[in-house]
Length: 349
Image (cartoon, rainbow, N blue to C red; front, side, top):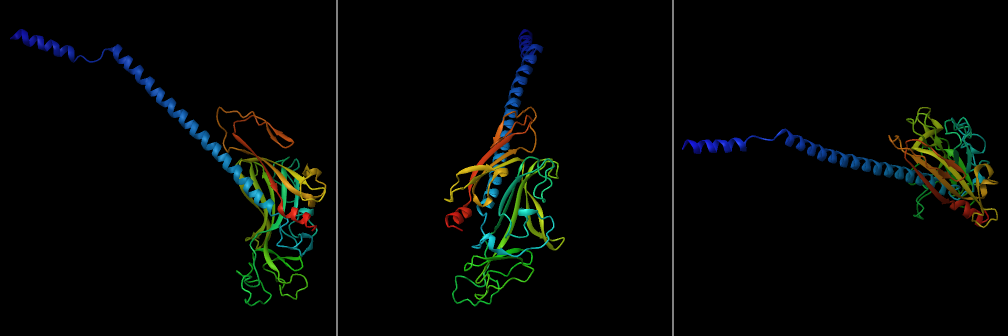
């Protein structure tokens, strides 16, 4: 009986002795290998996700920049039926206004499309002082497609009194061009001032329609110009300054990370409405002959990627850029047809 108990106790002792040191070390090594593999997979997945997210952000920023500039360019020389050279009136002295043919205070006697390259200090057109040196600056003038009338144009029986009031009265904080479909002439004025009558007997703007006027100057704002150390696609716009209670040229930051812009202009030299040659801003012979714009934008990430070096060469028309830094980049190129100049040329306007 005692022998049987001793035999059973020996079996229990052998079965409950646990792992040896060698077995424990092997288990630890295997566990570390599994944990290391899981961490590697996680880090690779995280990096892949970050890169995909960064590329998507660059693509979205580039798409938005092209969309905004493209929409503005397609409205070049659109003044509600009035010829730019026949739009009378001046807004007088405007704070922050451009100079020369780029000034936004009037339309007649200026250019509705104009471009130059920022000088070594980042200045252009007298209104831009913080551009990235050597990048292009673009001026666009037009009216917005938001017409206001004397009365509902779809109601032939609506009473008229020569005052713009439909669908709402003119805003005191807006600049307008009243254009006449009968004379192809216009009047530029601030809504706070006395608007010209649009009665049918008016010599200049009979049955005129009011359109909000816009002057926009697109440029690349330097990274050290208050944009969070990131170069930014910005624009100067003619709008209402609530602090000064007056019309002024103000700065709007549009798309962060746009660090280069280059423009090439399609010139119609034979009057058929199609581009015959392409020139950069410095060599455009006549801005009234521009019927297309080729737009190059180089967009970079806001934050550099540790361990990544971008040493690729990006070609923006005649300009080559080789960064050699840790930012990811996306180059976009787009051609924009200018509908209104083409229609004017083909119509002999």
